[in-house]
Structures are given as structure tokens and as C-alpha cells.
Amino acid sequence: MQENKSILKFLLLLIFIGYGIIQLRHIHLDFWNDELYSLRCFTLEGIWTTITDYHVPNNHVFYNLINSIYLKLIGLQDLFDLMDHPWALRILGLVYSIVTIVFVFRIGKLIGGWHLGLLAAILLVSNIAYINMALQARGYGLSTMLDWMMVYYGLVCLKTNKSKNQIPIVVLTALAFYTIPLNVYFFMSIIIFIGFRSFVRYRFDLKEYINDSSWYWAVAILYGIGLGVTFYIPILDEVFFNKYVHSSQWFNWVILNHVAPSVLLHFVSARWLIFIAALMGYIYAQGTRREGFSEYFWLFLSILLFPFLISFLRGDAAPYRVFANLAPALDLLMAIGLYYAYTYLQKRGCRFEHLLLVLLFGLGVHLFFQFKKIDHHILQDIRTQGHGHNLYYNFYLSHYHPNAEIQFLKDSIDPNIPFVIIRGSEPHGLPYYLEKHGIPNLSKATIPELFEEHDSLILFSFHPLNFCMRYEKNHPEIACQILSPKLNYNTIIRISKK
Image 1 (cartoon, one colour):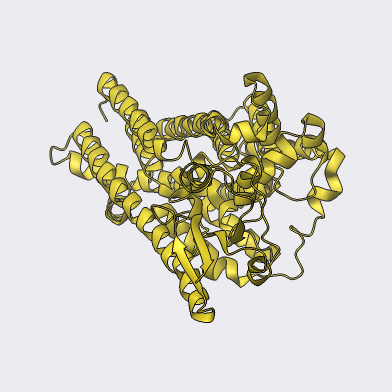
Image 2: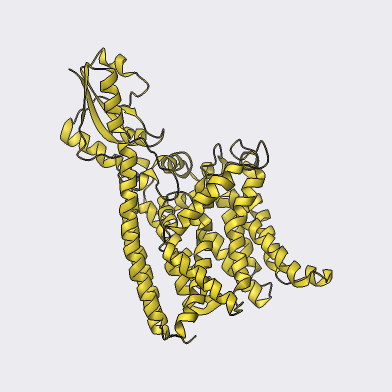
């Protein structure tokens, strides 16, 4: 297809500008439970602690190691200071996510030129599950970046049939493994694909099967895993034999029946028109026997689905976020389908630049309304008794600002709050912010015990309406008053004797 590089480069710039605007909603988010625990226990305790302490899998070692060095360089080594400037750390996640988009674009460009690369990039920046996880102060964004950089160099290896690209594959695999060990599911999916690919091509010739140059990629991955294991030597037992990765039985059907469908649905991000158009593109390609991307289709499908199958077979209980690094696979699959669809439209006079502008505008509008929907969903969880914790409706993505809420408490209600109690919060979320502001947290005490010495109490609740309704019903002598101007995950309530 004829490509006007100047226009296409301008469209690529628009994609990155749009992505930057999208992430403005996340870059200033207060830290939540897992982020705070990782910062306090691993990142800010010094480099030696980062690489030798793995008492829980929250320690995404390579990610925390980078953060430790980075925070030293910018002079932000106090947790409480960092809690006032979350953007200073989240900006690293923004960098990782932009690099990921660049390499997903390069993957598309490598296999189908600028048009396919741009389609892959715009679909990734409109993947809400990817957007939501990209700036989280955990290792998932870095892990995704390293994984897909490795895929790019692996594809170069496949296309050139040369082993010189093995070095970046080894290094990137090792660093991704050193970030999150469960990246091994991602690596195994690629090796399985390579094995099937070679078998289909050389199934009647064992010598050719063994000598297939695609094994360069698989061997490099295995070397990378081996190198990653050596990085873990100081904490080898804790990483590979801790209770969180232990599997007591084979075949966890929850992974196939619930986790996989939910994660894939989040990856689609309600872009059903795009999904259907991509599917029609594949149907068109099948009808016209266009098979130019069939090998890549099977690669990306393997990366997308095999990690769930491996997790199911192991019988582990992997959470949604472990699979966040698979998001680009679906977007690349949809990009190939759209590319096929465009070849049909091109015969009827459609220009690619016009198609991409329509996509940019349409997906921009779609994202605007989807984020409104997410905000409303999270608020409804607060109003009722929900607690979203997946790739789409995570509770800390909206109506979550404990730092500002506590400051409001001090500025507008009482500057000398002696203590507060909490009914509903993660153990390392709101308590850390109370500690930062010097307010004691007496949540271990019961409310009746505290009323023996006080006529009124200040309480935080993530389900304030439900708490007030139940407590006033069970204790008619007590009145509840919501003090926060708006309901949020850390709503302030005053409970008083009537």
C-alpha cells in the first residue's frame, strides 16, 4: 500500500499526544495499598533490601530497584514527601507505557508497514485495561514494556533468520523475569508457538525441524530465564517456593471460567464495533485467501491465550493484574483484522488517513464516555457495597483521594483531631495517610468502647451510606453525619450521641 510518510508521522504524533491527555486522569492519583506497601518495604528501604527481601511477592525486584535509584537521584526518599507528589513516580510508568506503544507500533510496522503499525498503536492507547494499569506504581507497566520489546526483537530474529538479535532477547527476558517471575507464562507461550510453527513447517523432517532458525528465539528466551534465575539467587527460595505461588492441586477452573473471560472482556474495552470490523476483516481475508499475516495471527493468539491455560493447568490463583502484559496481543490481533478490512475498503476509494482520523475521533469519544461510566460505577460501589478490583473498575481509579480528604478534615472540621477510626480500608492505604498527617488510628478499638470516653467520633468508611443506615438502625441513640462534601472511598463521618 502507498504510504505518505509525512502524514503518517503526524498521525503517530497525534496518537501520543492523545495518550498523554488520557493519562492526565491517572498521573496524580494517590497511592493505594499495594503501591504504599511496596514503597515502604522494598523501594525506600535501600537497594540491599530491595534485592534481598521477598517476604511477599509485592517486591517486583527490578522495578523497585529502578525506583530506588531514581528516587535517590531526584531527592525524594521519604515516603510522606512522595505521597504529596505521586506524579514524580508515576511519570516513570508513563515513560514505560510510551516505550511500549512505540514497540507495539514497531511490531505492526515490521510485519505490515506503517499502516498496520499505526492501527496497532491507536488500538493499544484506547485499551482501557492497559491505560488503567500503565501508571500504577507496581512492576506491571515495566514488565509489559520489556515483554513486548522482547517480542519485537524475536520477530526480527524470525524475519532475518539470524542469531545476532539473541542478545537483546536474552537481556530483555532476564529483566522481565526479574521484574515479575510469572512472566514465565508469557515466555512459555512463545516457545509453544515456536514449537508448533516448526512442527507445521517441517513435521516430516526431524533434521530441518531441529535446525529451524526460529529456535534462535526460543533458545534466547531460555537463556534469558536462566540469567533471570541467577539474579534471584539471594532470594531463590522465597521467590519460587513461597505460599503465594504454591499450587496445591492441578486445574483451577476459576481461571478459565472467570478470570480469562473477564480479562479478555476488559481488553476489548467495549470497542465492539472495532472488534466486529476486525472479525469481518479476517472473514474477508479468508475468502480472498490472504494469508500474509497468518503466522503473526497465531503468535499473538498464543501469547493472548496460553498464559491462561498454563495458569489453569498449574492450578494457581493468579489475579487479573498478572495478565495485564497480554493486552497488546489483542490489540495487534484486532489491528491485523482492521488492516484486512481496510484492503477491502481501499478498493472502494477509502484512504488510510481518513480511516485513521475517523478511528482517532471515534475512539476518543468512546474513551470519554467509558471513563464517565467507570467513574459512575466506582461511585455506585461506594454508595452500595461494591469493591471493584479488576483491570477496569479498580476502586482507586476514581473518587479516591485520601490525602486531600484528611487535609480537608484538618482544615475545615478540626485542626486538632485526636484520633480517628476506620471502617473499611486496605491495611496499608488510609492508615499510611493518617500516619503522614500525624493522626492516630484507633480502629482496633470498638465504637462502644470509645463512646465511654467521648461524645462524638470521626470515622472513615468506604461504604458510608450503608454504614450510617445500619449503625443508626442498630443504635437508635447514635446519629451519623457525613462530613465529606462528596462521597468518596474515604468518606468522613461524624457519629455522635443524641
